[in-house]
Length: 306
Image (cartoon, rainbow, N blue to C red; front, top):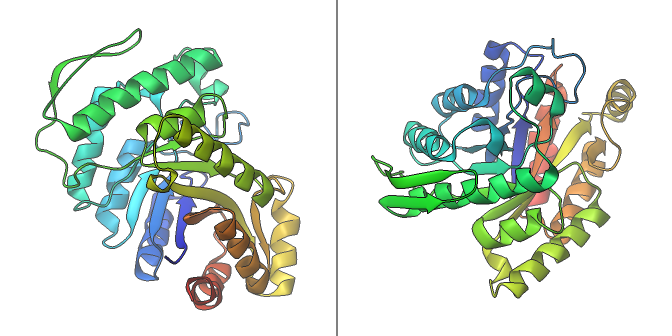
């Protein structure tokens, strides 16, 4: 199967109208997937004053602006929403998109926005415990008509989800790189796993760890779709690639980038595919480099998909 290609569009430092134009462009030009993120403040953190739009509302708009691509969030922070309510929101967006949603879920990491918006930033263990409990409620509501769950942090009493999602069920994707808990949780409860901004060697190693967790719980590793996000530093030409990298490399990590010319991008994508990726999403940050995107469509996509 050909490598799937997506675009990760963090909704900060950009006008909504420009973001909507970007989504429509992606939808028209052959990508498989668009994701947003779940932040109240800018990421990486600065001072909380950069423009940033809320995720549920943005994902609903994304559903309305597109027709072909699958859509998701990498990832909804379990601390920010009651899991049963989040399941209800995702079901609604699944209907708005006519069945194109995937549910990306994670434990959260952004200390500043937790504190600013009044959410306790719990220990790593508690955040992962909350993720595991919330996942069980959401999975239950996606797969059965009534869900009852009694956990330490979350409960559900005969919770119903009507209308039922268009998809049966909505796929769940767990995001993160923690080897002891996150990958175990993905193996136990999810349909997919996503990790951002790591080099290809580390990606291949973590894929192996995920396979080991699947084997421990007697699950076929092939059931889990594997995806990775890479910062988009590619240019349409060598000179444009040098300009973009020079302007952005101080902000973005070197390990998880798609850099250089279109040919270099093709080689990088093929390496991630060989290391276990079913889908690679390029992360777009303003200002949007439209010429680079068009070069990706015209040169990179055909070569990667064969």
